[in-house]
Amino acid sequence: MKHINIIIVAFIFCISCESTHPQIDISGYTMGTTYNIKIISNNRDGDYKIELKEQIDSILISINNQMSTYLFNSEISTFNNKESNLPFQISDEFSYVIERALHWAKETEGAFDITLVPLLYLWGFGPGQKGGLKNVFPDEKTIENRKIHMGYDKLFINKNYLEKTDPFIKIDLNAIAKGFGVDAICQFLSSKGMNNYMVEIGGEVRCSGYNRKKNPWMIAVENPENDNELNWAVPLNNMSMATSGDYRNYYEIDNERYSHEIDPRSGYPARTDIASATVVTSQCIDADALATALIILGIDKAIQLIEDTSNTEAFLIIRKDKGVYETIRSSGMKIKKL
Image (cartoon, rainbow, N blue to C red):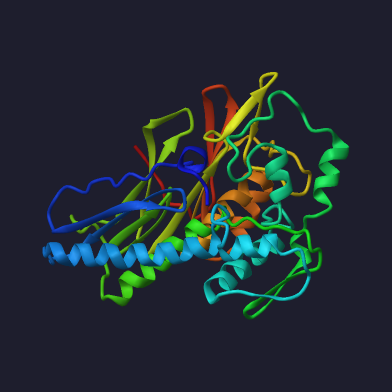
């Protein structure tokens, strides 16, 4: 999974959460980043909180064991290391995430593609890499050679079996797994009869009901130039939000910025002037994937995709010059200027 110092692209701040109703706060580490959960509950039993955290951690550990490329024996690592085009049996959860990933790959015409692993390593953003080329820029031939063993259309899923027509295909779920983790925890909390909560993993968030002041949860979007400066806030009620950007994990060569947002179609880091893309929709798994895709697509195609997708909105921060930005939002996006 993504490391916190690499991929957190938006800090989540809960605004107007002064105490009125009792709140359970649970936090920890998962998927190479942190998670934070706020639950409005009258249960003040300390043992209840401990038990709840143990159950949450168990769910997240299971997801990590399925989808982490940092674990040698995880489902995804086993699939990646299996140089065969025979069907590979996978869990229900893994199957669902792959299905959503392939859905968004098709919807974005390849701007979102979980098979871009060769390019991630080429540009210095693969698992275990810190980012950077040491001023050695890949040539066109090298890039094209890496793209040979890529392509979401080389993946086929049939219920609990995943098949790759190219045995050297490898996949990476960093741009969608955290969103799935958020949804999984929300499903668990709802099954426990909890209606008012906020769940956040590495910057991806989903809210249900109201905060402790009986107001809608307000989630802030950070300024790309200053993560301590909060300029906008999004009200979330039974909705999810994910933000992606080019300002957390990047390096510069000859004053040109190269971020971890790689365009699988061209083979190069995205060059679209979108510094940050925030997506609001019902399922966090979809918000997570879309936030990445919008950066790749560019302004016009990003907004068009959102307008064509039901119950989905977006807020884009566009880099005009160093320290100068403008914002664009979809027609139904609700956001408050702070």
